[in-house]
Amino acid sequence: MSDPASTLKEKIRRLPDKPGVYLMKDRLGRIIYVGKAKSLKKRVSSYFQRGRVRTIAQPKIRALIDVIADLETYEVKSEPEALLLEGKLIKQWRPRYNTDFTDDKRFLLVRVDPGEVLPRFRLTRIKKDDRSRYFGPFAHSGLLRKTLAQMRRQFGILLGDGTPQQLPDGQWQLYDDVRSELYGAQTIVSAADYRRRVEEASAFLEGKSREWLATLRQEMTTAAERREFEKAAELRDVVFALDQTLAKTRTFTRLDPTRPSGDQDALRALGEALSLAGPPRTMECFDISHISGTFVVASMVHFADGRPDKDQYRRFSIKSFIGNDDFRAMEEVVGRRYRRLTEEAKPFPDLVVIDGGRGQVAAALKAFVGLDVMPPPIIGLAKKLETVVFPDARPPLNLPLNHPALNLLQRLRDEAHRFANTYNADLRSRKIRESVLEDYPGLGPVRRAALLAHFGSIEKIRAATAAQLGEAPGFGPKLAAELHAFLHAPAPANPPPEEMPAAE
View 1: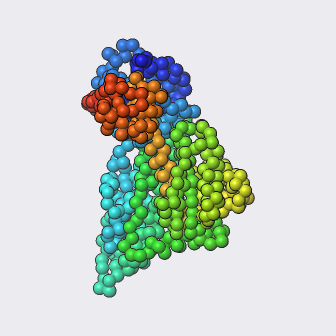
View 2: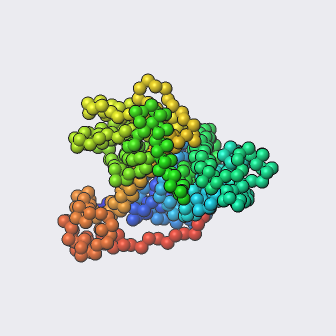
View 3: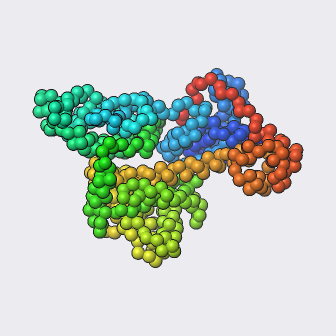
């Protein structure tokens, strides 16, 4: 029977002198702390140096070291990549020994409430679970206020300080005479006409959000490359918060039946922009998700008439290879999807969208060549500048950020990204849950596999009684009782919140 402490020491001894991210676990396999390091070996081993625990003044750090039973590491190529991965994993697992990584309430959001007769663009720092649509968070409040002022002139919308007056004929006067001349927009409008302004302004603001996100990403990377890690970490917080909010932004709830026609307009605009034979009524989008080459998965989402058709969604585990190769992964999943449609004599979509640039599009096209079938129209959507990439000699296409065709492609791409990340997180969660069996020294690979095959999941194993555990192949009463006690041992109490060691 191996000693868990010896196993941990052996893992630490074998760590590389390279940058990466480390995940500390307790004896139940729960992730309790995530950190980054320019040298995994030096950073992780520093936690366990002889006499270090006695000299640490902060109780939280001492408590952390006391309960570390295992660790997992991800090796990366550079410190900037480690910085990004650390943030992603903290946001994913929210370990209890990490201080709060982001607080979206520190930054300004723009809120539009469709329940108002005349929806206004208001500033807030709190995102509520209501029917409103939220944009942001935005780190640069001054720039945001200037943008809203520009939007008021450009689109003729109301901000939080607006005081519209309803006229006897049912129309609305948005501003007084002086402001009407200043803003240069028609001040007397119907509620329906005003809502069309809101839609145009919302599309503009969403595009502006993505434009600022790309700029912040570049600033963060530049700061990290210059080893300005404090600034990079601050920008990273903003990037993750903004990225998360954009991914979860609610669709604006319309109070009149204009959404279907809006979708059809966007589809027509997309067909024209891409020079298709007609509006792409059915579209499928593929995305690859992984963390430094591990847990590589893919998603495919299906839109019909501009809307998600979740019954047609598919997710894929990569089967043809192990490692980090987005191009091979894209070729595999596109080939698997359309081989099946070909075998079942089902129609291809009107448009295939690939999350990525020329390399990913070429990989998708290669899959159709391997199938020896004529592909449907294929494009890529490259994130950096939201560039549309074609598989032929046509030059890349950059549509205006408020263009309805681009906004439709972004919704499709973002949904594929969300679906892929959800699957990736599910796999990682399953691995973490099942890793608790690896922490119990009485179980080897054969017994672990037999236990999972007998019960079907780690949740059912935890719920089983000692007697039920003893019914699994290779288990007797003694081992079953010991395993049951191990799985139900109480977790250590949370220590008082204090700061963790400073990031390197």
